[in-house]
Image (tube, rainbow, N blue to C red; front, side, top):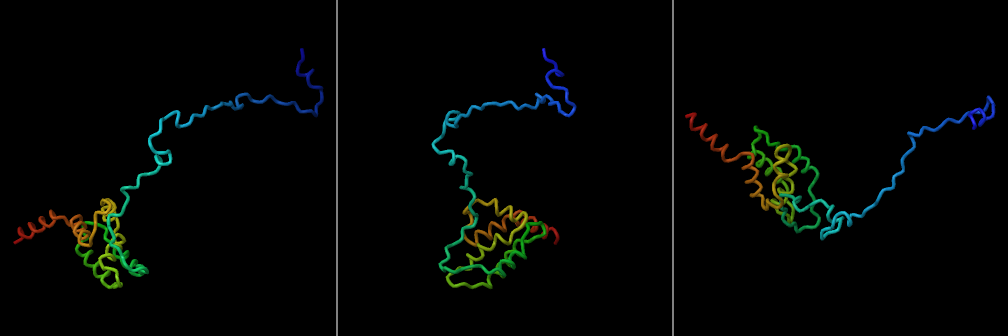
Length: 175
């Protein structure tokens, strides 16, 4: 039988190797690889088709009419002017005032073969912030076809007929 002292010759300069810690030895596990076809039967589409996010309901609410001119672009100054006068949808904000101011800003533009309503429809989303922006984003895709549609929906949302009736009753009670 060999002992440690017999196994290693007596040499004070020699280092004695230590035992390795058996707890840190990694376990090697062989994984079984199954294809998806074996686990789940596929539907009619491919996996790539199934993993695509649905995009049907992400269209814009406003439908912009066709513009016949080729080199049409909105000037940066007008866009900045529209963004500087945003409608937030607060209780104190008046949608009629917002619409009038917006019409005044966009009426200064005249482009050949570009209807003014098309310019208004293109710029209007940039004039919304906060609750008004949330309202616009919740509108169904392709639900606003004309400027009048937009004005009616906007005013009815932020100044509903019930509010008009309430204010009329307040005025009639005052006299």
